[in-house]
Image (cartoon, rainbow, N blue to C red; front, side):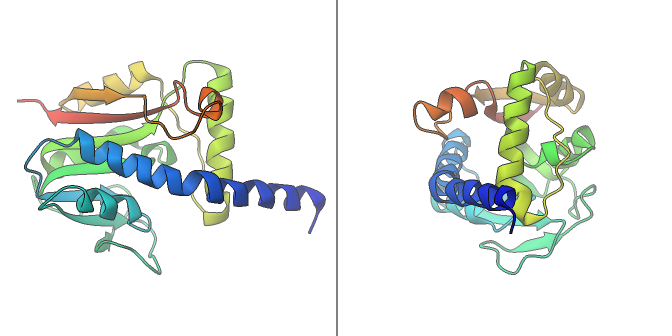
Length: 209
């Protein structure tokens, strides 16, 4: 093993030890807290191992979650279905809400996938993703993405959007912003100043009309 590879492996181990668990807990709480009352069915698009969706369900009485994934999983905490990354295999208005957690920046068809989520939702779409405003933000996001996903074979295309672009996509797909939160608490001080501020958001979207 080269010195560079060893160094990068150490970074990934530190990320897993000090960031991953906190991220899962923070995001599950953030999503559960933003959901309207009465949610009984939810779909997690790109659910991965299902840990976050499962935690959201545990914190939301009466909620049943299922997922979709492009890759088969050895283990998953929720029931899931394979899909092609483009078309969700469900009829219109199948779920009370649909969530995407750090999924959209890994696809080159963001707007179409958001539209699919709106189609199969009866009322709401919840998105956790990234935003940026300058080249340094973009560089930090690339580094974070690479460290967090390099070992898992995730498609890294770094398709981050500025907030103005996100809002354009939502509007074109008939979605209105009900709540936008950038104060997530993913990282402790002072690391949040570099790795979090202005780079992460959770948004609750409601279907127009």
